[in-house]
Image (cartoon, rainbow, N blue to C red; front, side, top):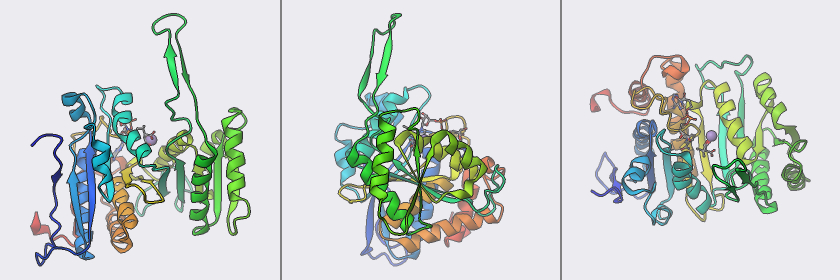
Length: 376
Ligand code: NAD
Ligand code: IPM
Ligand code: MN
């Protein structure tokens, strides 16, 4: 089979009675690189079990895109890759990135174009303390926050360039691009989310040092949240935020941040929860004009890839967020409850101080979701 041919890996028939399932969600899978190839199959196994318990099907179409595809074809995905993805209900991504290929090729050849073409302008990243998972930070036991990261503009811009390459006068310019529409929609999403939670939106800024874009961010966030009942806005400089997240991780509810600040704070918050291996992320197109994409916060982790020790919780949790998005909240809750029960029972991967490998951990989660031990 050519690398460009999608492979449907799971039948849409009900395992128990062989009848075609009336409710089937069509999901594109890109396991990608490194540990993405280890944690994606682990998560799919658990999501399939949850789907079977709740009477719906998941039709997975696996795309063999990523760094191997790049090495063979000189591109991370085929030229019509985005069009093909558009046909699916959702995209389930592992991670991309390889030490021998520049990140500008791998990430800007796959992840970033998907986020942008499908207008996935909200990057939703919940972080909370999980049962049985010790935090390296004192007092983080009840941390429960959501980072709403602007996902398609800001500091991640293609505007700029490099001049006088290799000469003493060499220079690089990168322009940050913030738009009123872009800030307004992400701030409105954060406000709505907070209204259904504890009502606090913390907006992360750097308007003391970045004198054009960040004061604009502050202004538009404030205007967007003005007059919203039940929502309180606080503003904090990103450097102070880094310290406060460590010193008072329970002080936050919904954090709204630009693309770069949201990225950095996600890894910090994930680490406070115990490991970036547990942090999930949803790249949402809230209008549902395009498919949304679900992936862990972490990357391809080349330092541990192939060792069978990657923590699959971030990928499983991202899968649960996908089920929720697809209208299957009960199945989503089951997946979360299953990995939480396993963590609470003390089964943990090495990043959390445990000794379980990816497979042992996944076996335990699968058993919670009803898989009989004899099946494998
Ligand atoms: P990383 O997240 O891959 O790894 C950082 C550290 O965390 C490593 O020590 C790694 O072993 C550990 N780690 C990450 N996930 C883990 C898990 N599930 N279980 C246990 N330990 C885990 O970040 P990096 O090393 O900076 O980046 C590696 C590559 O991944 C780079 O090419 C980078 O650009 C790319 N990347 C891709 C994505 C994505 O595809 N969404 C996200 C982040 C980084
Ligand atoms: C993330 C990643 C990406 C980002 C990189 C790999 C481009 O770090 O999703 O958090 O910064 O958006
Ligand atoms: Mn990141």
